[in-house]
Image (cartoon, rainbow, N blue to C red; front, side, top):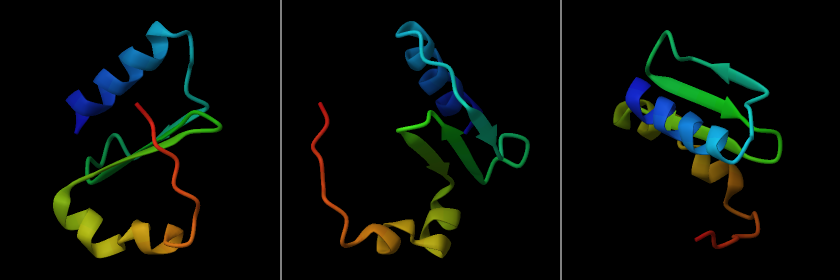
Length: 66
């Protein structure tokens, strides 16, 4: 979890974007990186299955990102 979080932060820092907040890094079950318009969730598999966040956004417009 920490390595994935650090890699994402490195990528954003490379394009001069700093997070507004980081939550959960010390617990390592679910990390949230808040970049304002973009929120990054990093889950352990069991935690992701439990919360099923995708269901909250089932009706949201999908945007492809490359």
